[in-house]
Length: 92
Image (cartoon, rainbow, N blue to C red; front, side, top):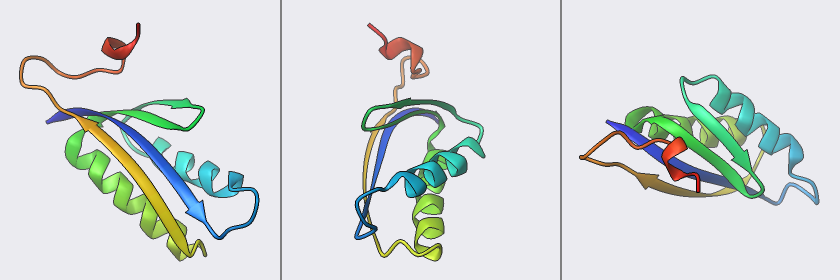
């Protein structure tokens, strides 16, 4: 099932800058067959729903394994039955 998602990861307790953790998130997401668009507070993703959910789990597992003690993620998902959801369809 195709889906679009908005994914935001918030590392907590890593100091003032979270840039290294967010760069790692982007590296992990780019390893998947997704269409990705970053924006100021997160990342929009287009792909298979199961793959998006697996990627969220991968991000949490990888960042924790690499020393990030606490992560809060926000995931907004959209699926449709009338046509495939696309990021292009979201643009105004």
